[in-house]
Length: 125
Image (cartoon, rainbow, N blue to C red; front, side, top):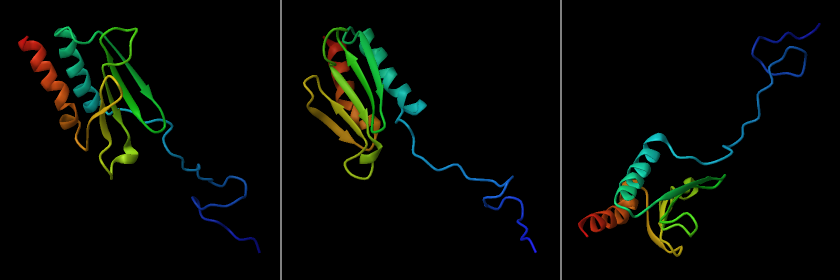
């Protein structure tokens, strides 16, 4: 006597449902609110004459936003999101022009604070 299978059960016979193998994301990206916060700061820095260009890079490990004073030089500031560090020192890192870590943290607003202060200083001058 042949065994019958109910619909939705797994098997190797014809017409059986085979689950798609689970896999991780191909790349890390910014959420809409995160990108809006970063681009808001970028726009204000452009208006203050500090930045003129930007670049974004998305890999499996990190999403990066880099801001440039001029297009042909290294970035003046770089914000990096690494979800793998969420449980440790925080997934957000702000790097300076020479690659030094300026700030790390769990909250994007706190990590961007040094750039906000720099913007205030640039506007006052």
